[in-house]
Length: 81
Image 1: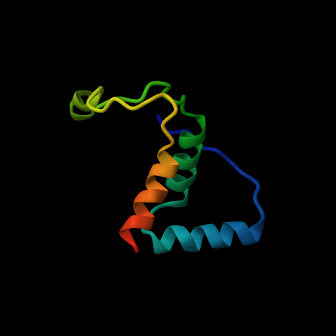
Image 2: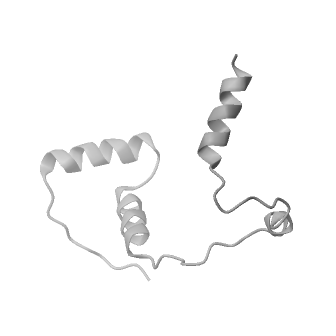
Image 3: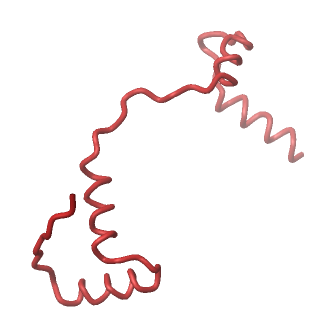
C-alpha cells in the first residue's frame, strides 16, 4: 500500500535529485523508497554457501600458521622475474 509523505529538503538538493532521477528514467519517489528500504532492511546474518563451494571444503590441508599473504607475495615475485 502506498502512502503519501511530505519532506522538507534543500531546494538545490531537490533540483539535483530530480535531474538524476530524470536522467536514470526513474521517479524521485522510487529513488527515495529504494534508499529507505535498503537502510531499514534487517541484515541477513547467514551467507548461503553454494554446493560447489561446500564441495571444496577440506580439499587442501594447510598448517595453522600458514601465511597466505607471504605465499602470494612469493608467487608474484617468481611470476614477474
